Length: 168
Image 1 (cartoon, rainbow, N blue to C red):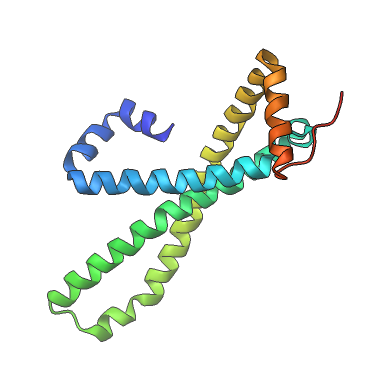
Image 2: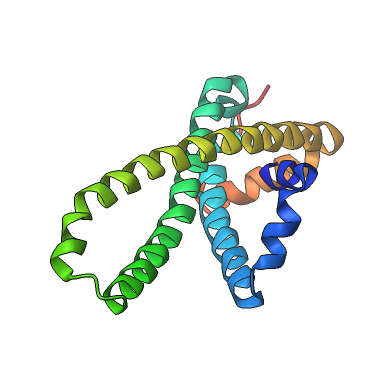
């Protein structure tokens, strides 16, 4: 969603063309890895095969926003670490003393905490949007092929991952 808005705003093309291939590939791999991890955890927590998730929209919003926020923070922290490392190396190479660098540590730590809160908030918004879409698509799949989704639920139950589906 954010990428589409950036693309429509015209700022995405300039940003992407200024990146080198390794940096772009690294950013894509990091975003893919954090999204995969958090989506997997959210889908397990949502447990869409039981009535609990689909009957309680606040539960879906809570799980989706939590894991979306975690995704935002997990994506931000490595980027912040790399940026801080680059700044430290350039500062020391530029002749700034180590004591001067240590003096800005509290401000840097505070900035990282504030940025993590912001990353969590943005990730939570995106997580809710993705969670709602996931539930809608799952409900459509249940309407189209109810026997198949029941078979998936029974297969997952045999592996001990979820509770058996309740009869209607």
